[in-house]
Image 1 (cartoon, rainbow, N blue to C red):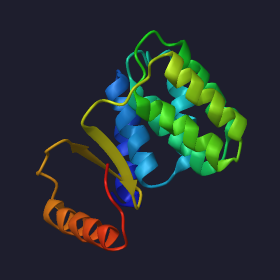
Image 2: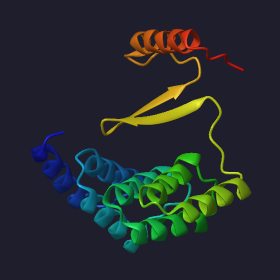
Image 3: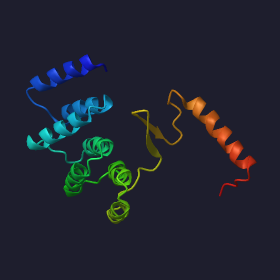
Length: 174
């Protein structure tokens, strides 16, 4: 999406007669992908002021917390985390990981420990067999035994090479 595309997307967004959570998330994610982080948080704030329900929506919190991490905005990150914790739905571990990353980047190790305790206490768990990682500003999702990723073959070759090299220097897997 080029700069012009995001401006056009925003114009369309602004004239929507009704904006549900999906429309808000689409625009927030578009800003996040272009690394317009202040705009991510501005739009998140507008969404909250408009009373858009974020119940059962981990994506909103995750993207907003990621923007806070990049901006190192602890205050805003804490506000978003508090709001997420107040919601009456099961938070995905990615939301917890996002706030952990924020505190770790700020070197707030006591806060990292506190968030970990909260995650354990609330049984915030990772979905088994599902992983998400970010590489060069892009998220990649994987399911166990999923071979659909366009770089699957090269990833397997790399993992095999790493396994071979680790065993060659004496690593023995459990």
